Length: 406
Image (cartoon, rainbow, N blue to C red; front, side, top):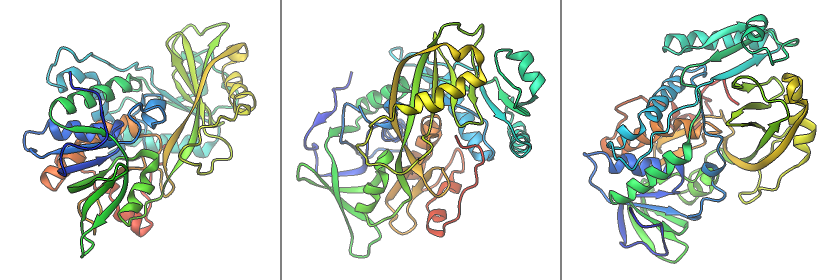
């Protein structure tokens, strides 16, 4: 097994690829690069917090869905689902690597207005064309299949019981990190505090570390999660990504349901699902500003005033529940369109983005990590065309339209 992340200075003063951030996306890119037989460069991954205590990766709910309105997002999740289901095979049939699988009880989007019901129907048409198993249900259909729901105020639902649900994302991350190190990627516990561009401004020539070293680089990958804007600013680049708080709550029910609870997207903005013998619920705050990078202070009124009333209204059996755990994480929130920013900068050509996933990051990490590694290696995407997520739309203020955002 590869050693733990080494604190302090890197072994060398020059690397072909420097990845800023070693959590899910930094490790995804590192793994896909080291596993590509056509890439033979050196990789440095710089992670400021090797415990990952406050990383978005550590606070994820590990969910995956195909219920998007845009074809490329559907294709990304379909690859992600297949990747999860064949995880050991895709990591070279290494017998140390566990099989992880998907708990496929599906997402259940609930619509309480005609407008949102029509949006679900339109999205289902696109999903069906991509081969997804999404169904549009009326209130009677929902009640018949899931009698625990209160559907008195519901017009329609959208449910896909195939390859949607949750999986062990932290195991996937852990093995990407471990095997990338074994294949030669160097991880250091340090922090990038500056970057230097060449005289023409078209390339990042070097990074500066908090420990004082200056490291020359061929390519820089911004995998900084909610801190992405700070990292981009070091290269003189602006991106509309900011940290936003997201709340998660685990609860036990006095009268557990007699079947799995789909990942239910309630019209209130609260979502909930089965989580083993417990249930998991989450939501954004009603007032949802950008927060400080280190602000993980909880607002305890959200459970009492927003989440519990919503889950008890939708599932009357949840009137008697007990909160057992809760946490606050950060979305890397793209304020332009809530979708990823991916690929090279059009003018600073060796600066790559894997940023702004706005809550979609874990489920999209196999496809986006693979695509980034392809572009670094070949100068193009070869598996899925991910150019719609490029930086040019950010510069032009042209949103990538995705209606299914949680």
